[in-house]
Amino acid sequence: MKAALLALALIGGSDLTAANACVERAETYQGRPVKYSMCTAPVEEAIKANVDGYVMIAYVVKLEGQRVIVEDPLSETQYTAGDTILFMLMKFDAPSDTKRRLPPRLWATVIDPKGFPGEPE
Image 1 (cartoon, rainbow, N blue to C red):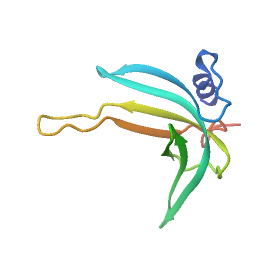
Image 2: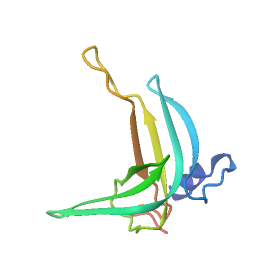
Image 3: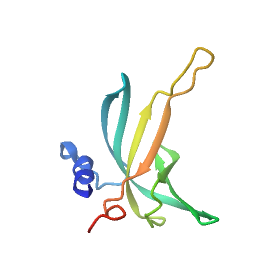
């Protein structure tokens, strides 16, 4: 899994070692366009919470001049301010019905190249 994620990050030979670099991709999922990018950016702030043993970790990075939250869904990473992180940024249309039109969505999740729980190093 680790090798596959690193290969995904480096598709096209693009350099993701620079701060705030992104490699954009586009796919179709269930007939809807999905845009995603593999990005790197320095952490401005680490947000960590533990509520009754339930853990949440997220990071604040700058993206196109705006602060963006990058979540760690596994709550396994331990980055601090100044560390450069690799993350997937997705852009997609939200489902809509005839009563309301929702704005397009932006979602970012950390990709930890160090491995996943249970995966040998």
